[in-house]
Structures are given as C-alpha cells and as structure tokens.
Image 1 (tube, rainbow over the protein chains, first blue to last red):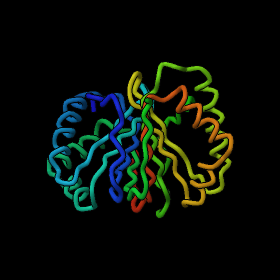
Image 2: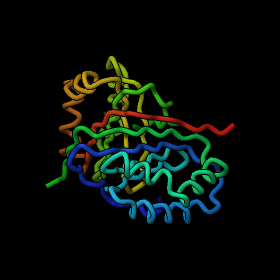
Image 3: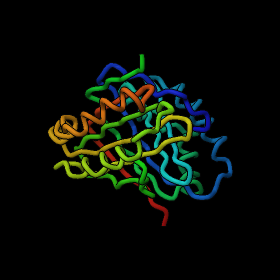
Image 4: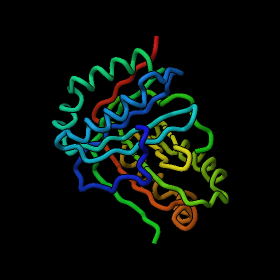
Length: 114
Length: 114
C-alpha cells in the first residue's frame, strides 16, 4: 500500500471482479506499511489476481480496489493464512472502520491523454 | 470531491452497482474543485444514487466509487447534460488518464471499532 502506482490499472476484459475496500485508519502505524507491502506481494501471487488501485486522502478515507478474474481467486486471497492474520491485526489496531464491496465488473473503459 | 466524507458509506443491501473511477490528474486545477462540488450535488439528486466514497493520494492516484441501485440510475447520471459537459472538460483539462469499472455488487460487509 505504500508504493502507489502512478497510474490506474488498465480496464480488463469483462467479466472480472472488483473488491472495493474503503477504510478509515486509527492513529496506529505500528507495522502497517510493512504489512501492506507484504500483502501487496502476496496478493500478486494469487492465480487470477489482475491488479490493484489504491489511494488515501491524508487524514481521511483510503480506498483500495483489487481486481480478480473470478470468485475463486477472491476466495483464495480471502482465506490466505498470512492475509487472515493481517486482517485480524487490522481490526485490532489499524482500522477504525472499513467496508468491503465485492462486485462483478460488467463494463470498463479508459481515457488516456494523447 | 473536495468535501471528503470522514467515514466510508455503509454496505448497502445487494444487488446494487459500484462505479469505480480511478484517475491521475494533470497539473490544471482551474475550476476543478468547483465542478467537483457541483457534481457531488447533482449526483445526489439522481434517483437510485446510494452514496459515494472518494480518496486521493497527493500527487498520485484518485479513486471515487459511486454506488447506485441499478443500471438505470447509472445511465441517468452518465447522460446528465451538466455531467457530460464536466466530463468533456475533465478530458480536456483535468485528467491525464482514467479508468472506469462498472460492477454489480454481490456481497458487502463492514467493520466498525467498538
């Protein structure tokens, strides 16, 4: 999460899935960046993982959207042991509140300045 | 876009739609905040609009996710005349690149610190 891509991922060929994770952080930073970097590495190794966009307004909302080919890929990521440990720590320390929306992408398109 | 909510919107009752707008801005700020505020007002008046989350990493990626009850609500927002004018100006002035993903939410859940 600390290494922001400088551009959004490309639109993939539908159907695929988007997992929207919107969060408000606590003041606790202990281990957060390190764990985020490790999660970035881990999710990239999940078969069917397509890419990820992430943004956070300083002092405000953070949104990470992970893109996956199908629900099996999401299930695999969700049940990953190291990820589950990180989720628990997130609820205990790093997040004041979060909401997850799991959605099937029907249409996507992009614009790029000439 | 300039008035950030301090917490993410709640998980709505599926099915509903999420429109993910991920963007990289140009250096041009002329009229951007004013137009963003106006679009926030306008979209809130669309029947079937449920809510919106928005975040932007300074100098990096911005992500706005709009939630709508159905595709008709998205179509109405997409074809709004004032919104279309803003979109054109966005491509001409404010955005280096953007990607839109239109997705049907199948499942959502949230966490809130006790």
